[in-house]
Length: 182
Length: 206
Image (tube, rainbow over all chains, first blue to last red; front, top):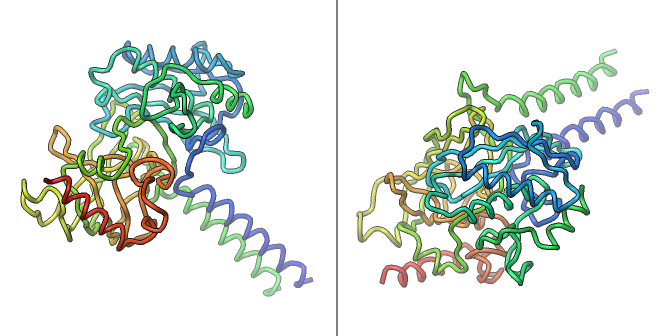
């Protein structure tokens, strides 16, 4: 009897410890589709809530929603609960926008219940409307599970998921990557 | 009886330890408890980009090899608990300054800001920059901000020589950013990296 019990509790302990190690893992290095550090959306519907955003933040949000709706995603401002959007003066950070999963993504399936998108007005000070739109496309791309692109994977320089340039749109690869994973 | 309940008891204790270790770091907003380990991963668009180390060196106000001696709670940005971000003040003990000394002299300590906590106290890692930890030794590429504080020049602005996460910071640094042109042999050799950084700094300050 003891011979049977020992392996069971050990197996249970291993499962718990493995799960915990994944849950508190410091970071994952993002590639692209279904590989955002912020996690994947838990379904195709994005109910988006703007939290006292400025006109620029609103333009970025509207543009991001428009771009998401070029995919199988269904993004809308009619409701809330999937993406919370903020813009504020977050200091002289390197980042113009930040996306994460508000309470951490589910370590079992990698999905995020509520994303949090922040646009940094400090960093974006003086940038024109199309930069904000590009930023909106980029950050909302993260909420659809996209990671960053680079010139090596975007040779024609037309993906808003690039960090070093400011394209306005998802390219075909971005759209296909989202559609493949939602 | 003793032999059959002990494993169960051990299992429950282990589960309790795991559960509490996952939750204990989360502070509630009112008491402002800050996680001792990052729990969340964040990603976003950066505004500074360097294709090689020479560019990053040129864009840095300070380049130094230093030991992390302390990390403190820094500034709070944002209005509500939901959108706030709180920086970590990383205190450095400089060992070797290769850029910046001509202007300001070698300080006893130098402090810079890194990400961070959310308003709810949860810790997060931004664009692959793992948290600096006391006892670590690294090369730091720092830029001065308008308010006089310092930040990493970019998410790739640290190379940890001694510590938990040795190597360059940032997302996929071997494939993208200023460290990518360096060979894998150099990147894995801290002595070689140090020589590269010193040579770059000599050019950058000319």
